Length: 312
Image (cartoon, rainbow, N blue to C red):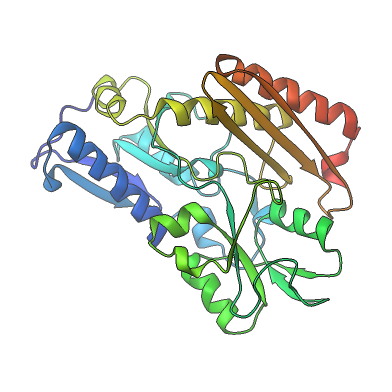
């Protein structure tokens, strides 16, 4: 159990150590401070290095699926070394370890992808055969489908590392999430912002989730005050879609839920890893049926794609 945090027993917030991850942890802390009238010294940020942060010389698909950026943090949470964990929801596996729950999501940021290049204005303006870097199989498959002439290379690292690689000429362009740029006050870095109609984002892109121990009712009460129900509805539908597809970092999947009153529209697509084929569709219904719509949309895409589609 975690009692109301105090300077002598601060709430320990676990996070990855990147600049963006720390910004997300600080946002969580600041929202809790405002909601409960707490002081800065009632919290302690605990950076934790994950497998995905340590292994930078290989593609994510070669060292595991989702969980590469969460496993060590969840172990610390389970063991009681931290009280809550702050995650980018697009990094989260659809199944959590026993005894842990995510029932708090912060208001969602911009869901769109950003096109980043020192000299080129947009995807369409890339010269034939340009080298484009990305660690995201989803983005690479989408780009290969639209521009098969481009040469796509692995491009890992935090925001600053990727920008330095561009400056060093490793690639002509790359992509980042607008949400991350916004949280770092770096929206100006985007050469252009890509509409979801052009490039459907990753499931849960732009959403921050707060994980806690299921039996920690004090933390549950603290977090309830900063939970955003609208984001929760959208993410529940998107992650239901991903779960039915058994999505991981090794499968190119995109999905986005939008709300209009009490109605939800869920768009999804699956791609062959080489971008040679895309299967896409959408569902619209009551927001309360979002998780069911996610399953139905996934099953529709799987039936149309056929066996082995995601593994060719």
